[in-house]
Length: 405
Image (cartoon, rainbow, N blue to C red):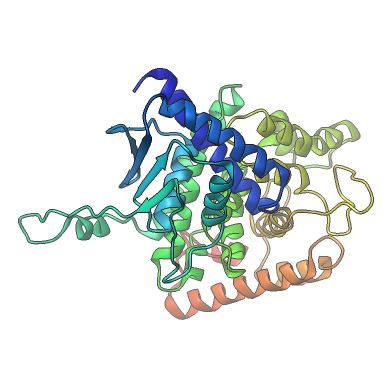
């Protein structure tokens, strides 16, 4: 494999994965999808060189081409995830692949996988499965069983991922490259946590309320967004993008001095103007960062818009907010109210619920708010019935009475 072939293969994967994201965000008929599929077909031809075809294998979480692992990146990871979710372990791409065939592949990868869903190959794109036999250890347990034993406690996940996210955030604060791949891995960890418990609603229980508000707020909003999205039946690549968008929604606060973010008193006009700039600054930063889903750019820009289109930044009349932005605003408001801040204590759930119901229809989307409060209510009931003795170290809903950290 020559360097030029590897570069062209990566461009093919990037364009195809971006086409899937675009189809999810807009539609399969969007002109951007067609343009990306045309570019992907051209890059595939360059990657093939004189070869009649190329076989791609998905083994564990790695993509293998020309008998070598493809260098990992956010696009490669998402491509592997999309294939694995549909049970595809082997992909054979022949030289004559057309943009229309790639568009049909985008259709396959952008729709939620269904039980017994038949995956059909086309003339120049062949799908297959790869079976990897698991060796047994001395106790007779398979490697798969051993892997299950290594699954971390759900309550440990947010705190572990928080430290990783803090490192990524600090690097970004120092004007270094934003580690999008690391963010993607954190979101994948959260999604797996939701899917590993008997009652997915309990995945919300480890929400944190520590002093590092900017960091914990982003991870909390991510978890709350995933809960909302999954309750609406959203899965796959779109669910992953919603999580990434939530993790990065406040990235613009990197440009706001810490003393303003933590100021206990009222902000003056110049300080408030700086705060109101953070959605635009964040969207611009994400737009200039390779590998960031466009959904994250939109969400960073819109997350302080209210349902009635007041708030900031100002937008034109008739502006259509994205679903992810609407969910992020709800998660943002909830976590801000439930977390102890420099200028006030945290609030009880009953108080937060009353406030959010009052904001419903003006600041917050009414139907999404009702769904969200039902989710949180279920969580409160589930935790109460599962844990007679309150655990003040990781309270599901932080209130002064529960001993907020």
